Image 1 (cartoon, rainbow, N blue to C red):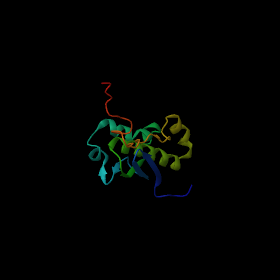
Image 2: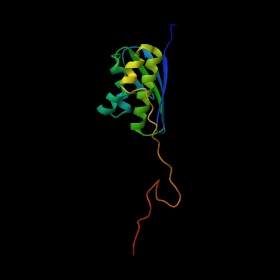
Image 3: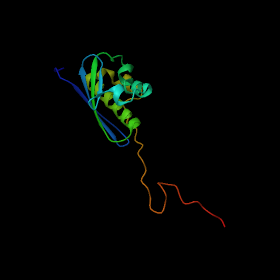
Image 4: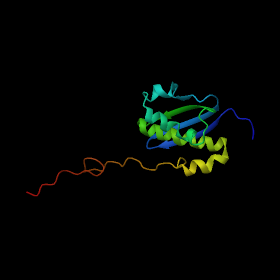
Length: 132
């Protein structure tokens, strides 16, 4: 395997898109130039979810993670980052692919927001029906 500076992975969820770089390091996570805790407002649940792929293969302290994420809300962005990290790990170590697949971290969640239709209040909500 040729010596690379970093390993790349792209993750998407809803309208969020995250490009992830895994760089050999000490385990620091940077999202859009901020620390993970600063970007996610010290939300322990979201911070644990971001590092799930690294924890599943016991590589939390081996890689620094740099993320550029755009679009969507915080939850969608976290899922996009998670998928991007998992994909980058498979590029770095092809033998980890079965472990990450078994943990269900290599699938993209295909659910998207449904468009609003004309004549309705939202995608499916109608005006209230009155019998009389």
